[in-house]
Image 1 (tube, helix red, strand yellow):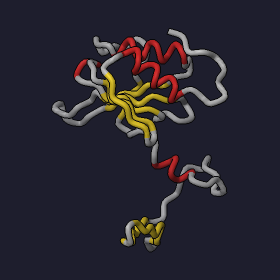
Image 2: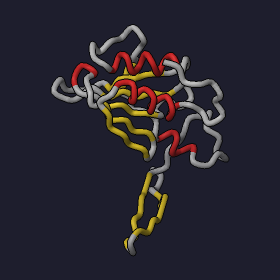
Image 3: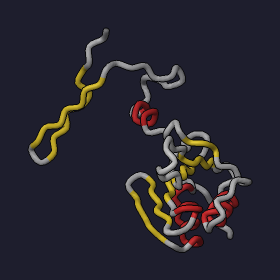
Length: 152
């Protein structure tokens, strides 16, 4: 068995944190020379998510939010969290594209009702307005060099 090795030694406020990991192999498509590819691999959306297609509906305002975002981002991929227990909250959606399927996370109340808690990287916003939610999500998904204006 391979021996676990020191991965990182981080210092914050004078306290040393050490993270150890056992050797693992990444998919063959991940070049070893690309920095941070391991973090990209580890930060993928949860395995327990299912595709949420345009025909799938919550019955709440989230449907309008997703319709607007899909209009502005035709390549949008939406996944809904699958839970293992009926009492668990499954009102969590991951939005992105084929390359990065979890760019934005949207949490809602039951049946896609507000408030909408939006998270992307280190950004977090909460709103009860579907139009504002779709604008924020579209802006976070929109590439910096994208010249097409957002439409609703």
